[in-house]
Length: 253
Image 1 (cartoon, rainbow, N blue to C red):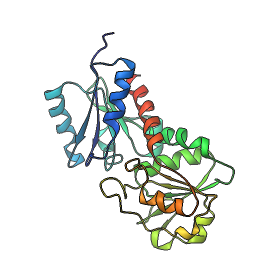
Image 2: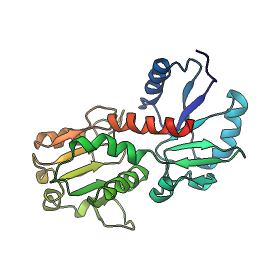
Image 3: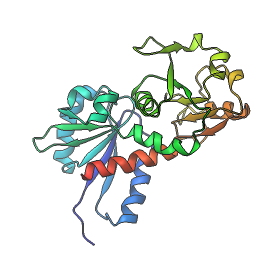
Image 4: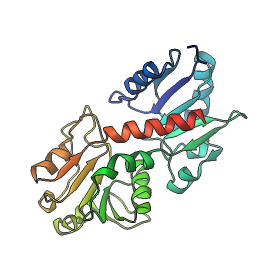
């Protein structure tokens, strides 16, 4: 079967940890997209985006879409001419595609990817969640959990425009009352696998579900500490796959 070539990729700053090329290579082989390619594109600063896109397409051909990751999920917004309702509501994107006029449109599949991955593990006691971080991924998780009627609070290093506490203010008692914990920062990602955000682990119990959106390594120091306290844990691998499938459908729509 001969199909039109399609060029996709991941835009970010430091991408050595990414499993996306392998994920899409497997998908292309499985589904017969022999000429499709998925590449990693490291960009030093988002201000270079428009010039960079032109250079890449002049050298490699037109791009059909890009995933966007840390640290550009929010900072890329001014360079996009349109957003889907999901992206507009969340305030961050993780997928973009070109429009017929040469501009780019943004979408967010992180939220649906997160919900699809976590839904089988949610129980009645997970009525309140602590979201660690306030970047693009944290905003997508917040959007998804609020849609399920789950109360959310953020743990951040700085003040934000919603209910949040700083790391140095977070108590073990507060952790006990939030049985769902979602770590949304890049701290602990390969190769810095020994790093971990400060956290009052004595508040974690066997009734907790602790999620780390990082998938490389498979078990972060954050998840390791939670597991020591008896919590159920999961990494971001299932979310990676779910958001990628949703992005693929959007690129091809």
